[in-house]
Length: 130
Image (cartoon, rainbow, N blue to C red):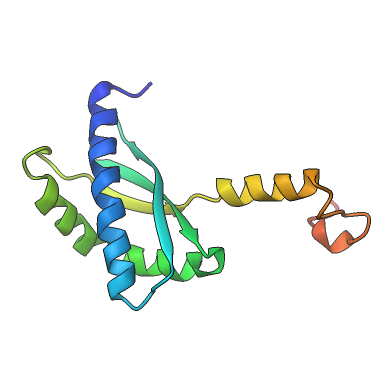
């Protein structure tokens, strides 16, 4: 169960991260890319913040995630500057792709009959025989 402190820190981080990441993307020549921070989970000891990102278009996700991870210390510094009056200690930031929207989209397409595995067996995951 998340404490109020964890939730408060998560929401402070989430608000500033959106700003910082979106600015970084547009300055880095990634115009038209939308980065949203879908969720931030802070550990009980407040030392680590897991940041879940939704990136559009989806095919830019991996490339952007790598860029964000390699600049994690710069991003942490930038957020620390912005939150210095709210946070005593800046948690370590770990970034992940939140693929739940993609998953929801796949379900939606399946329900609408757009991705029919009977018509296109390649849609099914290949199961390994044990």
